[in-house]
Length: 398
Image 1 (spheres, rainbow, N blue to C red):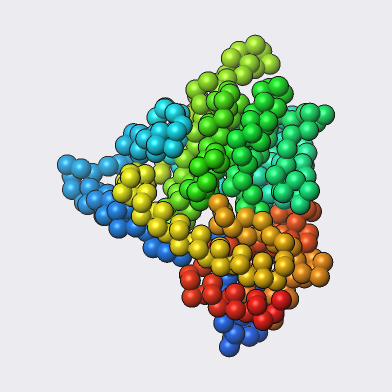
Image 2 (cartoon, rainbow, N blue to C red; image 1 turned 30 degrees about the horizontal axis):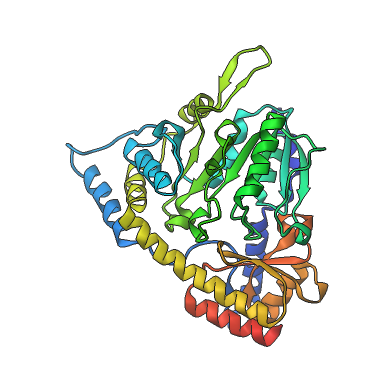
């Protein structure tokens, strides 16, 4: 019989959002007359901008004619998109090269697949609470995980402990689920820690476009020394509304090199290129055409209009919580609002309470780690009408 990967036995029975879906579906089946509003999963609701749509149509048209037809593309991604991302970073004050940019079908895939490059003996440092994919993808490989506390004591921004050694460090800023954002000085501490420990930072910047404060870094590469110790993941899902179109990218600096146990120098840029060439055939040409347009000044202006809409939703939710004197985080430079469950309720109990009494779906903080046991996440990605209705229900219930 085949020898199975028994590390899967160590995973929770179901993925967090699958459990939420099961509970919601059961409630809807039992209460078909109830109007359930979801502020749970972070899925966008506004349509793609016209600049992107026009470019997607161009891509379709290209495939309809022999002279412009495109077959297999480069696993690395088309140069027109990689250069558009380089220009976007440059406008935000960060220098990268096209050779360091790898296009994919989303940041979730890349944050899970990046583990292919690392051996089983690494010590993984992950904040608690955290995005579940970081934990599950490492547990699937049987790796040792060390958790660092992110809590109200540090405004849910875990900082390095020099007494703890790590080989691989996961950081998400703006953070999912808490909405907290690291400043330059805090990220510099992490970069210095990584350099001192000869470690790698895996930096998830999927929500960077929500940062409006010019003093907050939108990329780890805005920090001196980061190109020697960090890989950055980003996605168009929240930046440009590509949750259905699927496109993201990973930046692996050419300076990122380590010495193997045999004394041979290994380039992570070359390794990731090799991994992608072996296991990935590249994102669709059509989608990459649309993505490239999103990174132009005109395309990004339309993206920012949608982001402003979601940020106003977040502000409205935050105002409701302020009026109820409920402590919360995020909602300013982030689409997520992370708040303390009323009356010290545990988050799954509050999930059921909210669903049954106000027909609102959120995300229990316990699904992100033990430090989320008494916290709850709402997203601002709903439409305005549903968001306002949900706020009215919250005002009556809390």
